[in-house]
Structures are given as structure tokens and as C-alpha cells.
Image 1: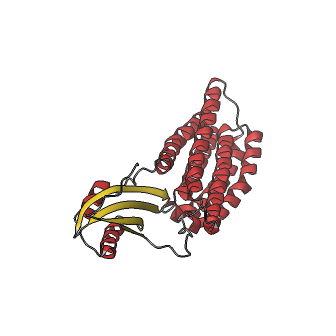
Image 2 (image 1 turned 90 degrees about the vertical axis):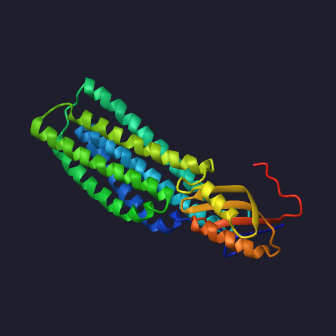
Image 3 (image 1 turned 45 degrees about the horizontal axis):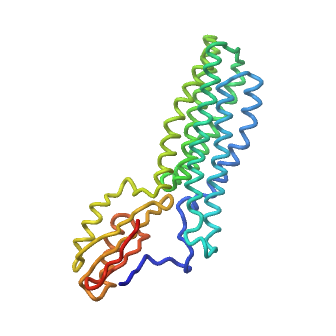
Length: 304
């Protein structure tokens, strides 16, 4: 039997994760969000605006989430020199994304409870300061949005931060609308209604992010990959008589990995490995281990 995997430079050094490429953008967003959270908290308390406090709470969650994302990708990058962490700390990125989802749900629950309370007992809101602060907050959101846009397509962790910023941008728009309605109509329930709408907006995005993180943690196959079709293509390779122990999972964002056993009649297993790796790369699996077994002896078993 023989095996061969995709080579990695630097011995056991793990390949760079997608999130690591966007550390600078995450750092800029963290600085912007932290700089504005205090402004919104003070303004929200002074004006008694629940929507502004909700937006401040969500921006604080943004700061914590972006901070965790930044810490996770930094840890994954620095773990490359640890011989006992052959894949680095890539799972920290996934765990941080899951924590982000939980934090988002917590913020949504708090805003919903406060909003329901204010529907029963409306509070007078000083709308002009709310409007000014909300416009400034929207500017911060848009800047953060642009910084994270590219990374959100490549990294689950960056996408978590991106979704938070996107939800917060919508929140800022909601606060602006709330302030304008209060200024023009004086309707006392505006603040509570908009706050509840913001909570409803946050929940499905948090659930989607959490579901994706859980999928990675349980090592399910990537949703975009057809494992049955992959197995059939490997089985159709010249001299391959059997394909078994096919395992495909996502290690971290942008890094799908695979392990497969092939039975071959061909004595030159290197040719079989090369052909199999071409098939795997065609499915986006650049990080793969291929083990070739001959047809004369006992096949490798698996307890998976």
C-alpha cells in the first residue's frame, strides 16, 4: 500500500487560511467600531432612545465579534510553527464565528424584550440628537462594510463580522427612520416598533452563520460538493477497481480537505495518485490525502 497527499511548504506548517489575508481590514473595522460605541451609548442614555441603545449594543457586539475574528486568524497564523498543531488553530476561526452567532441572538433577545416593554409604556425620545448620531453611525458602518466586503466571500470568520456590520448598517437606517418619524409625527411607539424590527432582522442572519459554523464543526461535507459524483469519477479512473473510505470536510473557511482510499491494479501508484488528485482539485479539494492499495492483499479497513 502507498499513500500520498498534497504537499505543503515548510514541513508541517499549515497552509494559510483565507481569514488571515484580511487581518488588516479586521483591525481597521475594530478601531472604527470601538471609537463609535461610546458615542452611541452616551447619546442613547441622554435621549432615552431604545433604537439608539440597541444599535450601540449591536455595535459593541460587532467590536467583540470582530475582535474575536482578528484574534482567531492571528492565532491560526502564529500556530504554524507548533509541531503539535499541524493544521494550526484553524478551528478557532469557526468557534469565533459560532460565538458571534450566539452574541447576535443575545442582542436580538434583549432588544425584543425592551421593545415589548416600551410598547406597553412608551418613553419620550429626544429625536434630533438621535438623528445626528445615527447618521454618523451609518457612515462608520458603510466604511466597515467596504473594508470587509472582499474577505466575506472567502472566510466564514470575516463573513461573521461582515454580517454584523451589515445588520448594524440596517440598524442605523432604522434609527434614522425612527428619529424622522418622531420629529414629523410624534408617534410615541416609533422607537419600540423600529427596535423590534431590528431584532427580527438580526435573528435569521445569526442562525445562518451559526448553522454554517456547526456544519464545519461536525465535519459535514461542503454543501457545494457532490460526494457521490466525486466517488464515481475516482472509480472511473484507469486501473482503479474500488473506491472506499471517502471523507470530505471543511477544516476552515476556504479550506476543504479530503481523504480517500483507492484499490488499483497498476503497480505504479504515483500515476494513480496524480490522476486522483486532478479529479479532487476539479472539485475544489486542493488539500487531499490519497491512499492506493493493491488488489492482491487485504484492504485497509476503517472504523469511521
